[in-house]
Image (cartoon, rainbow, N blue to C red; front, top):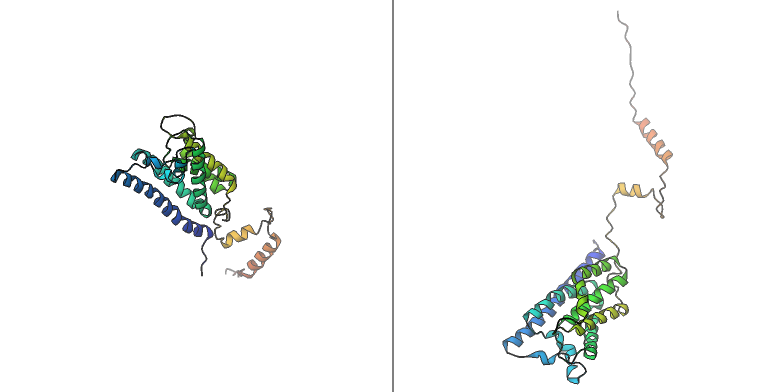
Length: 252
């Protein structure tokens, strides 16, 4: 029975999670917004309100609440991409990282933010971008480092959102998410990708095997015994020789 390649097995087992869970999470945000619009509710009061007991519920509820469709749309795309990356590359710790990030970024916002209702999933977006970047760099695995560089390329400009700027934007929530991702990247350990071989080893042909036999375990070139090859060649050549006789006839 043919055994499956470990990289292919990893891809198949991770792909389902990387598609299913991000879609469900993002769709749930749109469902909450649809309920709010359809039944004319206002969920803003369920957001994080700093240093007030009533604002503690917002630690869990605020990521699902958005001020408008533009706010929701701007969070949905990066959230989908970053969640897919988390569940694919860090499947073994994805839920743990997401829940701890939700809790830590929410608590930090509750502690440091201005007295106002803070809503939206942008804190989670900042957490994911920060976690994926720093975790990839710290792992020293070329796949995860490549992911970290892609995150920087796509969302590196998010760092400016951690500073005071446009009114009505919760830069404290952004800073809380970014800080939580940075700190958590040092403590959560994942072996989901580190256990894989570096690459798929192709099957060697007979000619490649003969060639590789000329190198020792340290990579030093040591050609095979040429005298032995030449003797074999001369023997086989002698055995295959054809004898040709010439007979000269005298002309009359």
